[in-house]
Image (cartoon, rainbow, N blue to C red; front, side):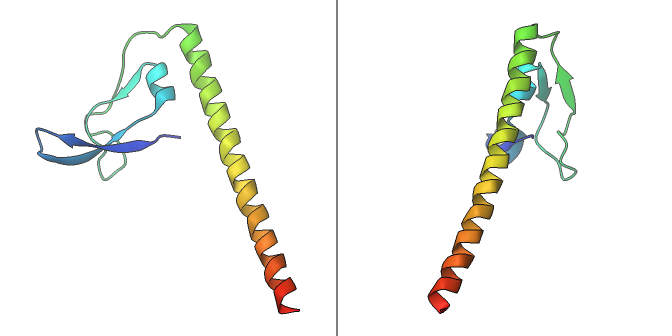
Length: 93
């Protein structure tokens, strides 16, 4: 899951979208340049050195927790829809 955020680019003199992923940074990967129309960094990806194993472990754990959180959010949304439907049905009777 790659998040993006907007920052001001002083060279282009406008706001641009960049990648903002802690797990990628922990692995030593950095997007170079703003996000283009193809959803890729303008100047590609760079990797700086071999990160220590603890950083790789942390990145894996963060991604696992993000996935679990998203699953819980989806589950809660479904539960909310079920209860809203039941409430509507109950009010109509």
